Length: 340
Image 1 (tube, rainbow, N blue to C red):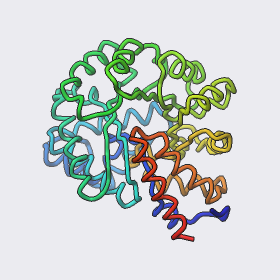
Image 2: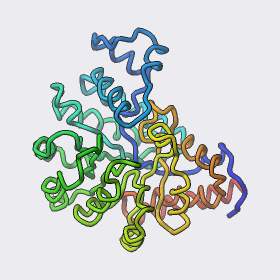
Image 3: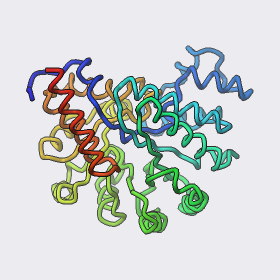
Image 4: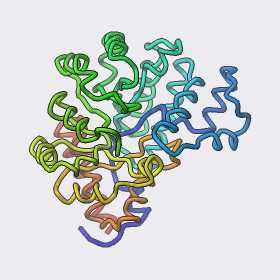
């Protein structure tokens, strides 16, 4: 491999996995407006430009205030399928071979959309994506700013559809909503054989304590965001020992706290931590996975070695069989050799 600087072309064609992607965050203005018109929903905007102008925020809280109301346009199974399929086609353009996609059922059931509608629409899109070469799985997330009882109710609603998703996550507003709030439901999910991941957003109140709870008390298999872990060497040692990776999102970081956290990502990467780069909510940040990786590479002068390692990490911490991981890693090596 080479330590030369990388091009956008190289990054775009590099085989990769995306592990931190909110389906509701892929709602592009064009689809939002089309679904609003189809479902006769007044969203307060009449043109694509007006929808784009509404996608304005400068913190996690202000982002969520824009993010959740936009979901009202999603009403039936076809809407959810269309949303996921639009993302999966974009993923194909970025040479994403495999993706694990978050979805937030409570954001829909709380406004009267049946759980069945949400899961069946999203799952149908994963089946269609196989036809154009993208393998996709779903991760059901609980909204941490809703009661733990709501998470448990959602989990029970989901069990009849357990063959349609592979993991359980935790997202939304972290303030005063620590991982331990959800101890019971995550213990049950682990017992039932689901993979576990948790958001530990950047620079939140009690960031390190929340990371500690997620790792040591809940037993999460991955950290979503999580770069505040650099503040505690003992927790870094723990994730090294247990092969726990981080799903980082540099462009969305820069919107929420005006910092990509690239310095922290590189520090961890060079310590052998399995750092990955992902797009988070690409419709809102107007940055898909290759754009994120290129932005990080440009600002922090990543070498080709760094970029390739990040891509390899994405398969390394994916919830797929070892044989499949090896197949994807060979695909990366072949690509790098051919590109050279």
